[in-house]
Amino acid sequence: MNLKPLSPLELVIMRVVWQLKRATVRNVYEVMLQERKIAYTTVMTVMNKLEKKGYLKKVRQDRAYLYHPSKPQDQVIRSMVHEFVTRVFNGSAKPLMLYLVKDRKLSEKDLREIFRLMEE
Image 1: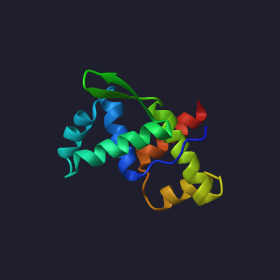
Image 2 (image 1 turned 90 degrees about the vertical axis):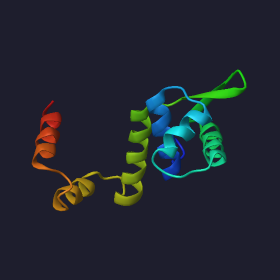
Image 3 (image 1 turned 60 degrees about the horizontal axis):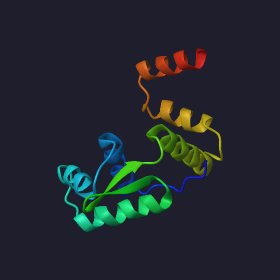
């Protein structure tokens, strides 16, 4: 799976589209305005880039385009994690896990859940 990496803003927009399932630029813009000040044209530009990268598909609906995700969220996250582990940890997840444990980013509950999943 060779997805082009997402910028932080692209990821925020994808999260909104995944949440809404189908959305116009205006829908995404209005959701984002609740969290941050952003220009409508910025949202439109980024959504067009996401379509070109293959993350979104659009269909004409009346006078606007309706966008929907072309990739499921878990597939995109898996790809991003894989790319991160490859780039930062030379492809090995062990140093990442050690970092998370040592830096106390994983609680005891998180660790028990990880061990349970590993046993399955």
